[in-house]
Figure 1 (cartoon, rainbow, N blue to C red):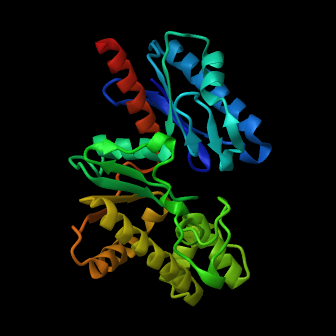
Figure 2 (figure 1 turned 30 degrees about the horizontal axis):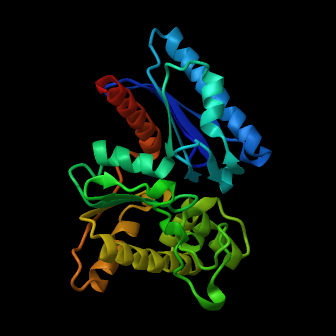
Length: 308
């Protein structure tokens, strides 16, 4: 199984056996600044090279799983992904042409839902029927498990990061075109950007902001509190609407550990009245979640076709 995850700043890819064992893993740069065509060409090259490696190592490629950020049209296989400079890009058709083997199924899926599926099958959400996977990284999106099934919404579901929680003059313009989105305050990228704007100097990502927070930096403390406040509001809203029993937080910010998780638990607990209170835990599969989810989706396709 060839699996590729285009979410995040680097492409995660590998070869995965039917039992879930990772036979080969690697990361590659995603040339986002070079434009959408360059990103697509890199993806095609990666899939072909991994397929060739699998064959050279004595393995048969049974299917290919590719997960991407953005909105996927399940019928046409086209993708709209702003951060990849894709607008109706025929990703599945290009993959089929590059692979050149009609007997190898190609599964195209959303990166966060794939990560949520992996956490549901093998990670922090195992055993749940109503739960949420919420990675806090460059952006914010959610994988929603409702009554035992991942919700797709025809490719549109789960964009919790683009719900509006900031109003008035403090609202910032989001990449989606709306003002005051959760993602503009609580994503890892937003935390670094907002600290830099207030401090008047560039920082090395959210990790440096967390180091400054631990050292008692007042600007870091305010930026962090702003993020916690809107995250708590988002989790309370989601809990009220869909009643998850467990919420798994992933992405780069989960590296903050209990500095993130305990305030979220306390804040949600304080706000709930009649609602069922969810566990709030760290996701366990880390950066491999999306790639593993791609492989699981692809193996599901193989199994389904063999049983039909």
